[in-house]
Image (cartoon, rainbow, N blue to C red; front, side):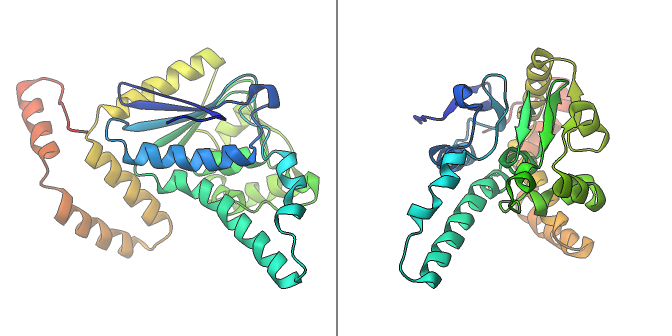
Amino acid sequence: MNFTTLDVTLDAGVATIALNRPDKANAMSEPMWYEIEQAMEWLDTTPEARVGIITGRGKFFTAGIDLTLLMGLGAKIEDDCDGRRHEKLRRLILKLQDTISSIERCRKPVLAAVNGACIGGGIDLISACDMRYCSSNAWFTVKEIDVGMTADVGTLQRLPRLIGEGMARELAYTGRRVDGIEAQKMHLVNRCFESPDALAAGVMEIARNIAAKSPLSIRGCKEMITYTRDHTVADGLNYIATWNAAMLLSKDLFEAGAANMQKRDPVFKD
């Protein structure tokens, strides 16, 4: 696919999706929002792509939503009827939400590799990823409070489940910066690497490890963990029983068993 705001590559089952507006601190412009959703759909439907990594080109991961997008809202929703104008704004917000949700909806695991600043909409973005990693020079802020708005595309819904309600409230109410070390301590990221190079190498190693596993089983793991997060234990157990009744007896299961007996690495179908 051809993108104007993203740099997308695929190598050995790992798709790297890089926000690619370094001259604008990777600010999330309107085209970028649409292209992120398109990239997630491509990742989901491309058999050869088993794992995705979202990162940023340049010094910033992302400065968050592009202010020109916010400044242009008035013209986009213009209508002589207040009700219709407000409905248009609601639909636009829902569309932006759907871009973020497309990461979670993608059947393949998506890892975030954060180098430098991750601001505002960047928190929405990484909160929807399966795992998050950063370098020691990374920093994070729920910036919306400082521009007079309430974060509305996923941070306030997903962040409390990652770092706990009390800490999520603190970050949302204050907009304060969190560095990479603190981000790891509060479980916003799985690991903080010493440098950007170590981050890139470390996350790629994790992604390749995942890509070597049974793709069908990995997709099942993502489906179940996300489902269980939003349902009771009993609901989750019932769902996995139904899932495995359909998916358990796959070629992947028999290939894993044969490889173990033959003391070789398994080779799975995409």
